[in-house]
Length: 220
Image 1 (cartoon, rainbow, N blue to C red):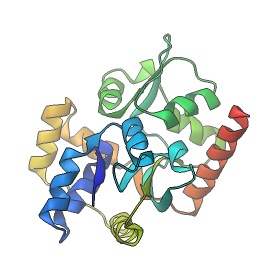
Image 2: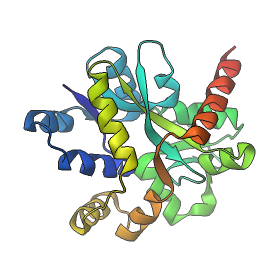
Image 3: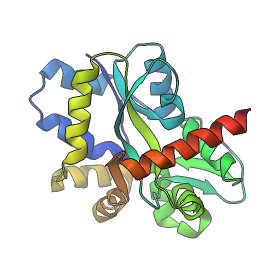
Image 4: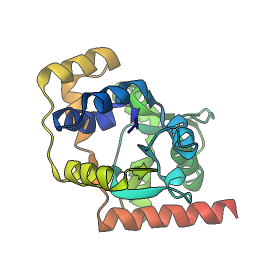
């Protein structure tokens, strides 16, 4: 079994969760070799080079994937999916974020991930938080990614649903390590993760349907 890893802070709780599970060492080791950025994992899952991954919401709606109600959900703001005012440049790493900016009619440079979080914390007034803008417009959460599967669906469903139910504690040494490597304070990481939910509940599902419907109309 091969799982594609997005090595962003937003999925740090999931990777800590996986390490605690009674899974084979070969499976755990394979995750490190299959890590990449979101749009690359979209392509790898489509080509069946990996069995499962958290992939962008827009890509997860394609035929052929089975999805699980576990994902990356911004309940209101997110701080790591941004548009920089005064410039225009798409982020090649996220199809969903680029499309969301277009649907919200926000022009500027799209920035995602840990780099975006660092920039936002340094100069929040220079950026528009796309999840916050989405919530203000629709009063709904925004689902950035869904756990999507090619093979071993029952296995990943158990893993994903168990993770979404648990409240993960992040050891201080791991927080400090991420803080050092990503240039973001440990307490800032804790605060950031409080913006996120990993369970795609009924309200998040409504938000996802609104987004996917708007995406279809946009491309029509």
